[in-house]
Length: 428
Image (cartoon, rainbow, N blue to C red; front, side):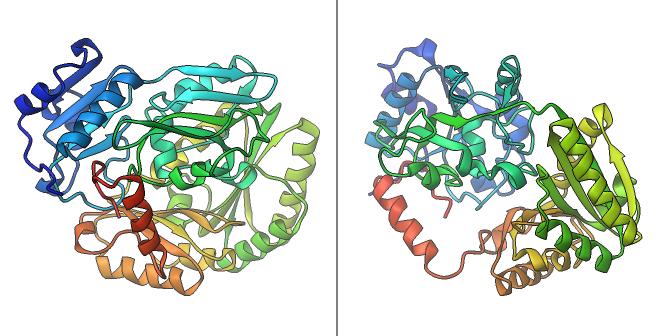
């Protein structure tokens, strides 16, 4: 197999001449905004693509993939390219294919609490539509203003709502995608108890565009909560850890429950030292009872307490993730919950880690060195976890995923079976 690394625009146009030009836009990426700024963030010259292809329909996308498969054009799927730096550096010329115009709602079963949506729809737009029916999709990704549904699934990106509702794969009921040859495949369905077909939803969650282009997804929904309240507790490491153990062992049901690093606590003027943030949403009386219990425990441990509600609470949860993702070095981490507090306390960083699952994000300034990150990775590995380098100036210097054991070999086999021609740029 000989992949076509150098592809003149005229060659692409000639090969896709049978496709309706009004439904398939091909442009040089550095000639249009916001793509010029987003794609120029890639760290190495070999990362930079030549062209951006934007189909208007799934049918046009299917035809274009078929052409790429036939002529061995390597492509990289994106939505709005909000997380374009994440993952392994790309080491070959490519065409970016965006789903941003394939962005409609296919079905919203209000009474069944499910929605089927095209992958190019922004999560922000979807939430606004669902809110009109008193419902929401409990996924809180980074860059919520521009992140698309397909991109969220492909990167398995969700935030603090993981505590109550689980991750992306826990909410995904069905999926449709296009293979490298342009043919469509489906799995799951549009009802909560559907068990038809292979569980490709979990396989595609976090696949980073390796296996195919996601075109549609069906999610389970939840009613909008009646009320919401957030409590932040800050203080000495031992006291925060004691409260973490107490809350985790209790019967409380917060929708978010995260450890906060010292620098994040300082940035938001929440207090001093480490922090613990809990969000309670639902029936007002339940919120009062649960938050009062946490406040009592915190007072007994001499922790500083702040309470947020209404617009002040919304602003806090809007800005927390933005600060967590704004560093020059961004890592996704997982670790046994009992060691999460030691991980977040190792270096000066903006960090947020779920205390019951041990999954979160750490970001650092450019001053941190690659050997510090490798030390953190080793600490995570030693405690049944992982550290993935999503973005860093030194990322090309070492393997970003941090896989151990035989998982990588299996993933490569799956990649070969799904994409034998190598149409989709390999991120493994």
